[in-house]
Length: 293
Ligand code: NDP
Image (cartoon, rainbow, N blue to C red; front, side, top):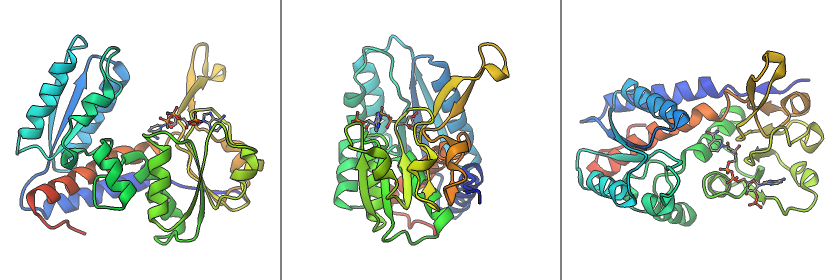
């Protein structure tokens, strides 16, 4: 038996279509401001697709570009002006910032009610306390994908998240906890990681190590949500070519798992879909609109 593939591209398209429907039902158009500092080519690609998909969902997208030479004060002044701009509902600061700029300090300038990436300390606090707020996008995408495979009710499932970063591991663990899962957070100091992983009904590697999770780390029938995105050499495609792989060894895990996300085409596309959802939520919360279903 081979695992069913979880189609992150399809699920993310569904989420975006629902966002577009919700936007149509609102009394006004939510607006997302994207701030890009410098000319990192990968960041430019991400920003272009965020702008395009925001507009496709019927929302307003405002793109602010600062040069790589921008000072911390210039970045933070721009964020302050977006905080003060009542027409802007969401602010996304594209990371990483150029060397020399303090990301944490810049993120902390974002009004938590406009923090559509869910990265400010206030957003993290709201998540930890179980208060309403904007949740980090990639971890949110993991929960949506798990539900797409297993149904809405995840209660009682044992989730093992490998990784405890602020961006992915910790918020993913808290989001699954909020779904009444029993959660274990594993990391680089975890003893006998394969044995810990084998206890998981839902295994969520978020490490950044290509093909680390092997088939014999997976409980038969478990759901594997692979957050890792790793570029490795692919000499079979030609000299100097590369390809993307996850943290799980897909070929090894697929025969054991019940459901599995591919890389690419799994968790990756969910991040932008959740960003768009957060923008609608931020607009509704700020402007006192009721959130469409
Ligand atoms: P970080 O490097 O910040 O965190 C990695 C985590 O993995 C750490 O907690 C670390 O543990 C743990 N770790 C490292 N080595 C091991 C090991 N040998 N065994 C067990 N745990 C280990 O990475 P991120 O959380 O930012 O990202 C993780 C992955 O997710 C990356 O591949 C990244 O590209 C991908 N990603 C994908 C996104 C998407 O849209 N799909 C979005 C964001 C990230 P410790 O704390 O002990 O050092």
